[in-house]
Amino acid sequence: MKKPIAIAILSILLLAVSCSQSKEDAAVVSPPVVYASLQEMLPFKFGESVNPNRLRNNTVYSGIAAKECNSITPENAMKFNSLHPAENSYTWTDADYIVNFAQTNGAKRIHGHTLVWFQALPDWVKNNTGDAQVFENIMKTHIQTVVAHFKGKVTSWDVVNEAFNDDGSLRDNIWKQKLGDDYIARAFQYAYEADPNALLFYNDYGQEYAPAKRTAIANMVANLKSRGIRIDGIGLQFHLILSQSETNISNAINWAASTGLLVHISELDISLNKDKAQNFSPTQDLLEQQAAKYGYVVKTYNTAVPKAQKFGITTWNVGDADSWIPSYQGAPDAPLPFDVNYNRKPAYYAIIDAVK
Ligand code: G3I
Image 1: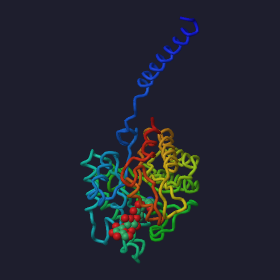
Image 2 (image 1 turned 135 degrees about the vertical axis):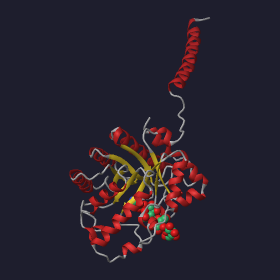
Image 3 (image 1 turned 90 degrees about the vertical axis):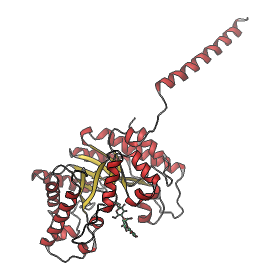
Image 4 (image 1 turned 120 degrees about the vertical axis):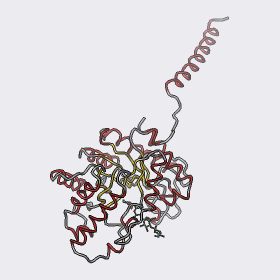
């Protein structure tokens, strides 16, 4: 055999061997990722807010909630108007159903939402002409009764929700009008007295784009602490739009971590239909951008928040068919990690890939 031909044959053989070796090496180094479930793959709790009727009537929905998450927030069933529709009557059926679902599907943590909010109030509160004493009694009795009912079952509460404006001023809502600026402190104190073992959160939106709101919340936390009033955590709702900047997102997460409290990303969704187009349907490109943003949120949370402060990340409901956004904005959207048929979207895989 001539020398150049022998060399060529040898080179081809060597190349074939090295290719098959690198394939084997690659197989050894990176086994295929099995995306078992969010609760199994994340190093912190993954939660979903849920709706009791969907849990009852849609087995795909309840199956996803059972499988994917280990923390549950009732989306509406523990709000004032749901639990306490008339002054002397409470309706526990829906909230109890969710609690039972969470307990019997893997002992999921239950996060209560929410005790004191200016929305979701029944008419008997909204239209009440009573004075400060009457309203003190309404707030106190509501908190005591609700927290006592779920004592030992609900791990944590959003005690006060959305009390500040974006400019950092205290929202001029019915509670402030009737009870004065210090109602927040008393709400936390009543919740603590009703269940000293519950973790108590302040929950709000907009910390990613409203630095003045962050400052107001931090001042409120410092004030409560200086007075010996218990507060355990901060909820960053994170109802995000796709164009929300990474800097804003990381500023909010870093700020929450700097309070030293537990940090809950409590209502995560990422809206895609910024123009509110009536014929909106998500393109693959939009879904990939959404996945990248979900990944950024999860990666930043995982790296910036110390382990002891990680309360977890909760999405605001399960799939795109369940989101509050389409009815709120009057146009379709696709903000969650599961699509309308509960198939996993690129965002789902990005959440898991972000912690690898
Ligand atoms: O249950 C009634 C139903 O009987 C009735 O036929 C129907 C007609 O409008 O209304 C139904 O109630 C609606 C309820 O959602 C259940 O779907 C209320 O009108 C509607 O106001 C309510 O909206 C909820 C909203 O909070 C106000 O409570 C959304 O689902 C819920 O996603 C949203 O969640 C809030 C968080 O609590 C706080 N952070 C912001 C977040 C989004 O707004």
